[in-house]
Image (tube, rainbow, N blue to C red; front, side):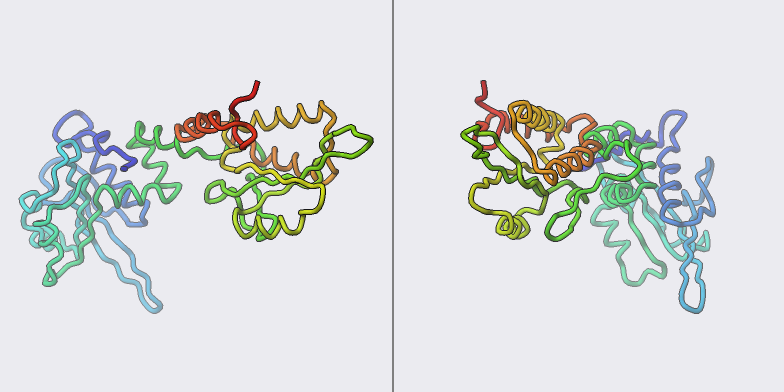
Length: 316
């Protein structure tokens, strides 16, 4: 499903900001590293919206290629860009002494136009940026994200809510590495599990829970290898998914459960207690934000699972 709604950019036929799509194209091509030779203007343009220059650097020489840019904004109608929308491409490219043609479209080229632009006998290069390619490029870099935020404020607000960045709280970025393979468990997105090994202390039938080990790791092989290392008589393991634990409500419930156990006399080894603090500190920047819709749905699902099966339901 597309992230950016190109209808947010005003049509070129109306309003005081009718050249917004051309300005967007200019800034987009600029962040790709192209030099803007001729920018958007008003009045007769002889079939060009912009002219940009690409510098190609080889081992022994530098080559400069100028591209004619044609912008077509048809997102509101949803119609494709047809050959009648792009007449005389060859003559336009030659008139402006360019070596390439860039079609910058908020929809797609029609099959007829695509055939025309893919013809092998064309004496110039062709690049097409359709809505999907533009969106993919914008979302792949910090500069692109800033540009998307400027021209697609509503779309960006929705996307940002569902793809929150960690809160900027501490000097260093939060980090958790698998205790077996040392792979990051927080990038590119949170994954893996938190594992605890506990025992019931046998000190004259007090029955107090004691946490001996706490660590985090990848699911699957890493978990199996670490389990074989820590498993021994009298210890029982339990786990939490990291991507569940960064849901704010789940995080708070986990802290409250830990505090309640401590109040009830549960104990921790020095190592397990230090690991608990490290875990809380590194997950907090990922928690201190609004829940995404997917996380709200996940919490509702967890609330339907009984606590003895790892959920939050049926207590009290």
